[in-house]
Amino acid sequence: MIRGMFDIEFRLEKIDSNGDPLINLNKIVNWEMFRPELMKLREKERKSVAGAKGYDPVLMFKVLVLQSLYNLSDAAMEAQMLDRLSFMRFLGLGLGDKMPDEKTIWLFREQLKEAGLIDSLFFRFDEHLRNSGFTARKGQIIDASIVEVPRQRNKREENEKIKNGERIEDWEDAKRCQKDVDARWVKKNGQNHYGYKNHVCVDVKHKFVRNWDVTDASVHDSNVFTELLDKSNTSADVFADSAYRSEETLKELDELDYREHLQRKGCRNKALTDWEKQGNRTRSKIRSRIEHVFGVQAQRAGNLVCRVIGFVRTRVMIGLRNLAYNLQRYSMLMTSS
Image (cartoon, rainbow, N blue to C red):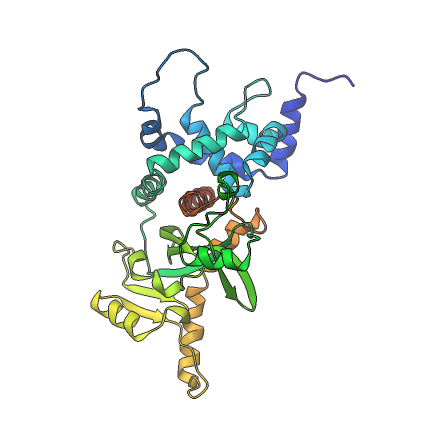
């Protein structure tokens, strides 16, 4: 087959005609805003000038954003960068350029973990959102979503020790490195899940994630609540489902001068009144907006699974996922405005 000089340009034009969301994301987001934080990873002096120069940290950060948007493993991310023209264009790389391999991706994410930068990167962009006119407005919504990890096949006595925080001496180091002893089981809607929870606070007006935290999946949603609240929101209204409703929570919100809009839940001996049911329907129109966040995160990726091991690494992955959602949401709002 004879290849033309402009074959790649023609192919990219075809991709554009079908709608490539990465074009606007790349154009609208000023990626250089993250450089001051990312350059902290380069502050350690090199022992020698020999060897290849490392990849630009902003480029590697964009690789992690892509990986989060599409929920790809490190190996799959390397394969997609080599194969997809849209990924190469987003990263500013050409066919002849050297691509980061899966080991490089893993190492850079490890550097983010060790430096504890995921929170500062997230809040740097949140500061940019507020400076760009996207202040947190009209109240906030709290909810949590289960993020699964590959299930462990352990013996019953091993699971009991893990649950009690005990070390399993029988495991060799190589086996122990592949076991996630921080994740936990939880049952939801009759189905068992193994992993962690992504607890988020979303503002009602713009649907940006304003605050977040991660726990293992066994932690009840209500155990991570008031600490997520965004004090800078222009409204004191707080929305959440019935899992968060308790006398203690209502008292806390009142002491913090928030107006509660928590869903009510009936019980066997005390059914909801018609007035309470109507109140639930009114609240749910706003509270359900947070489902958009979790829906978008799963839209491209399908079943959201974290392929890293341990709480600290999982928190970095989930933090990147929340930041990637905000970047994507910002791009969409700026494009439609």
